[in-house]
Image 1 (cartoon, one colour):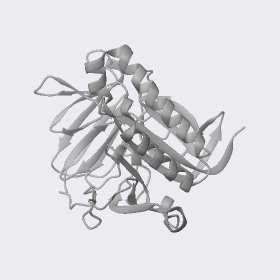
Image 2 (spheres, rainbow, N blue to C red):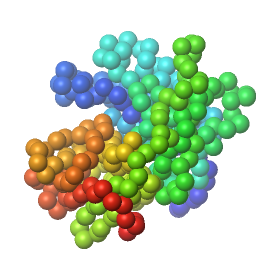
Image 3 (cartoon, one colour):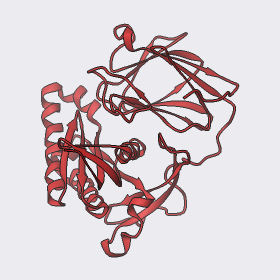
Image 4 (cartoon, rainbow, N blue to C red):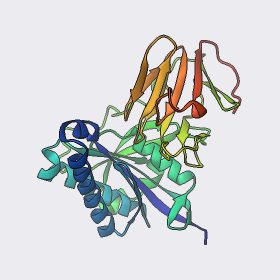
Length: 306
C-alpha cells in the first residue's frame, strides 16, 4: 500500500573505497566496506531511523524528523573518523540529507525529496554533511546543531537554485571559517554555451543556466537508463565555472569516449566535457552500444528541448 508522508532521507557514501580495493584486494576491501555500512546501520537505528537499502559503498536511510537525521549524520561522521579499523585505511564518508514528503511503497521511498537528498550527497565532500537550509531551519536552537551557509545549488526539477548548508559535526570548529563559503556554488558563470545530448531517439539541449541533469535507473532521473549495471543515481551533468561537468557517483563508473582521445573511466569524481564524444553509464562504450549517450558542446546557446 502506498502512502505519502514527511520523512528525512539520508545518503552516506564511503570515500576512499577505490584506493582500498586497489591496496587490499576485492575480498578484504569488501569486508571493510561491509563493516562501515554495518556501523552506519547501527547508528541509524539508534536515532530512530531505518536503512532502506545499501548500494555498493553507499547506504540510504530514512528518519521521522530532520533533527534525528542530522544528529545521526553527526554520529556517523564521528564514528568513522575515530574508529581505528577505519582510520588506518584512511576511510571517510560524505553525507547528504533532506526532509520532505515521500511516497512510501513496499519498504522503499520515492519522490522529489529523495532526489534532493541524493543531490546533497553528490555535493558533499569527504567528512562533510550537506543538507537544504529548509530542512534544518529552526532546529539548531534546541538540538545544539551548528551549520554553515554554502550558497545555492541547482537541483533537477527545480526552476530556481535552493539554499544549502553543511552541518558542523566536529567537536572543535574553531579552525572552520564561517565567512567564506566552503563550496563556491554561486560563482558567476560564463553564459552562451550549450550541451546537446542524444539518447535512443531522444534529444536534449542544455543551456548554461539549465538545472542539473541527472542520469540513472531511478524514475526521478532526468534521463532514465534502464540497465542492470547502471546505479539508481548514477551521474549528474551541471554547468560550473563556464564548463559542463560530468559528476559520477555510481558503483561502476561512467565511461567517456572523446572524439580525439582514448576512453576515460570517471568514478566518484568530476570530468569536464569538451567538444564532443560518447557517454556510457556503468560499462565501456565498446560494450554498451545500446545505451550510449552522444554529446556535443556548442558555443552558442539555444532553447531547451526537454
